[in-house]
Image (cartoon, rainbow, N blue to C red; front, top):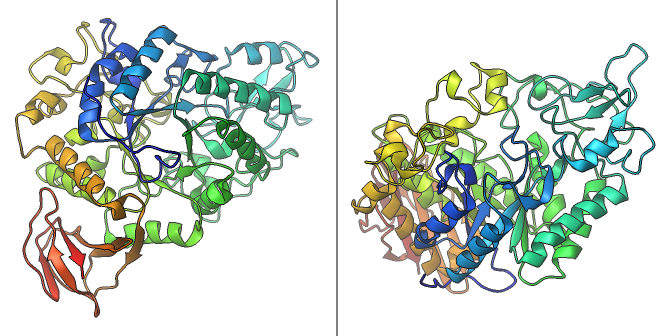
Amino acid sequence: MTSTKKAAGADWWRGAVIYQVYPRSYQDTDANGLGDIKGITRRLPHIAALGVDAIWLAPFFTSPMADMGYDVADYCDVDPIFGTLTDFDEMMAAAHELGLKVIIDQVISHTSDQHPWFVESRASRDNPKADWYVWADPKPDGTAPNNWLSIFGGPGWEWDGVRRQYYQHNFLTSQPDLNFHNSDVQDAVLAAVKFWLERGVDGFRLDTVNYYFCDKELRDNPPALVATGGLDAPESNPYGMQNHLHDKTQPENVGFLKRFRALLDQYEDRTTVGEVGDGARSLQTVAAYTSGGDKLHMCYTFDLLGPDFTPAHFRRCVGDFQDSVVDGWVCWAFSNHDVQRHVSRFALTEAEQPRVAKLAISLLSTLRGSICLYQGEELGLPEAELAFEDLRDPYGIRFWPAFKGRDGCRTPMPWEGGRAHAGFTTAEKSWLPVPYQHASLAVDKQEADEDSVLHHYRQTLAFRREYAALRDGDMTFLDTEQDVLAFTRSKHDETLLFVFNLSRKPVKVTLPEGIRLAKTIAMPGFGTADAGATVTLPELDVFCGALA
């Protein structure tokens, strides 16, 4: 394998491009219809060729797979369906040889009910791990201790007949929540983190990072002022009808994140990125979790994971972050394994999907922050339409048909369009079907087309690397009289101007007074027309120039 020059040093994560791999859908090498770690190793050259800095692996730990691995039964081993620890070590060595950092998911707010910790905890009220999970007595009438809800539907409590108590679960009933008020729990979790640090992983993506602690007094959540699920949950889910003041985002979480960071700081060049799902409080939470240089390195929120593809939306999200999070850092993304693919969210027609895919990565690559790409978006994959009988996601099964779940963005990666299952597996059946439309967008087909979305991703990420201002430079929004997104990125003596037309009609933009262009810069895949005091942009297009 050929080494690729990447960002190095303690701040390699700042402005980095991270590529998310969903292991069960990337590449199957043992013909069981499920992707595996050896498959990831096989496809690392594809990832490195994109020009990214790191890969983030969704959970591959030992698990009964009730929630596709987000229900961990052993934090320090690989589930046999994915391979072995030796396979993981070989994959990581191959990634490092290619200049790729390796970030792994840490799902520590809860475990599987098959984890030995929970098996012991539920056995009695006086065993050594009796207080490792959130247990509570019922109300006098036998009902749950309070009104907390599960994101996956129904109450956030499950009755256990052995202990004759309820235990809390923010997700499935088979995903009991750990009690982080117990210091022994924190010690055990950090020991698992240290296990992977010693193996050489470069960082951790922290699932539901604001869910670690709940209110000690187990107080009821008040109703939400506006009953809407937002991006934390679909509108069909009553979870959005509560203001979640007491079941997550507790002040004690900051202290634990400091312990986590102190452990990481014992190792060189490691990083953390936290997932914050906190509704209207998300930016405040990100500010608290990333400030001071002693907690998380960066966080991401759900702000850009919705359907809004307008200048006002992006200016509000990015501007609010810059105003709220003074010394923290953000990781922006348009897609991941939990939301509908952004090409389907942003494009109005199938015909314009390739154009929208190209414009979206151009925009994402010019924002201030690190960015995360989700496997398949470099092919412009739309959301897969699946039949109910094909679903594997318990969330989608629970809320069908009002909410179809997350399987539509988790279908296998299409590698070879002319082969069965698009080259993902040689098994008779893959764990989720590969849609015909995805097979037509396979990697081998796009490699042969210089105008493909895949080539555009490579060119755009190369463009991002070319300019220091795009990695960690300042970002300033410009006011115009037109409905466009205009901003500058600046570092040292380099200032770049970007004007994005996200509409379906041409626009003529008068640049603000005082803005003087030194030259026009060709953005990959878009026009390079000269501009003076005005910029004329076709629909779904972008202008870039260097300022004098």
